[in-house]
Image (cartoon, rainbow, N blue to C red; front, side, top):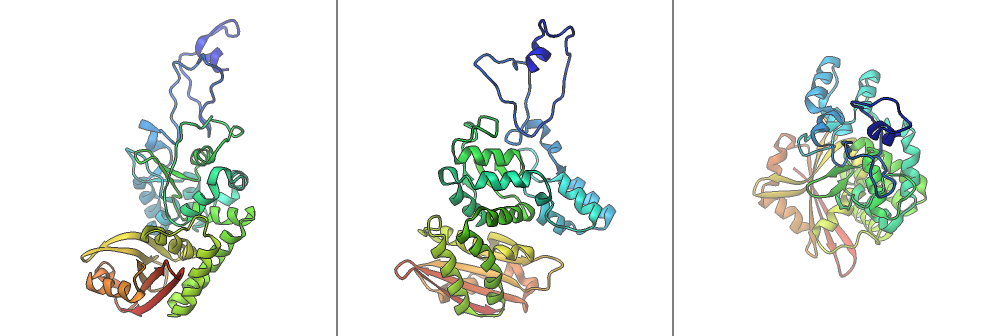
Length: 346
């Protein structure tokens, strides 16, 4: 079809001056001779000057929230997260319009046809795909090579092919400068959670289900229950959660607190006082839960973690929550393979 449109020939009696085509995947090129020399392509990996038209910009979403009396912070938590070189905040347009129409924030991805595709692709577990999904659920970004993708859904040879496909389907966001892929927002994270539960990845599903128990134990000051929960999550997902530093520890803790995203915005490396707090849990505007500051240690002590929060004045970043702020220190001992926790209020 494209050869006929752009090259002319016996099959066509007219010349096309210009055409605008849309689709989810990039065009697949067959053979060594290209019929697309005059074809310009803009994709989720390289939207170039069309980046602002991939979805709604932040200014457009703010205007929609003002017009329909919706909370912008909630809209941001649920549907922001896509970012391109020239546009830093891009929102899923279908989800935003569903939230506006229904006057309710929620997961609209799982009501779409592509959700079934998500389950199928991640269950393939090509080339360490499972480990990559776990790491992204834990808030990490994954380095990938998008160039080997063959632009179709049948020639998936490795992990990076699947991850690139999920970028084009909108389930992952891509940092072109760093060549990293990540889960963009709460809606997509929730879709991954449901998909993982349907794939038979029992240990990951168990960890996600147990995260609500862990959050409640933290809010109730039950340090021993916290220790046991984090131990279980680490042991059952040990293939990817091999600790060698505090960054790896941060991954498992973020995974362990997965369901906390329903009530909190989780910020890693929050600038505060005389340094950076490892994890800050800032309650959503409509949440009545206390704020959390979590400091992580590796082969030290949980008391040392609490002491660092105080000495470096990390609480300054959450000063509006003083009196309703919980300090959490977590240490991992590489010798005993155990976690210890300390909880205080501020």
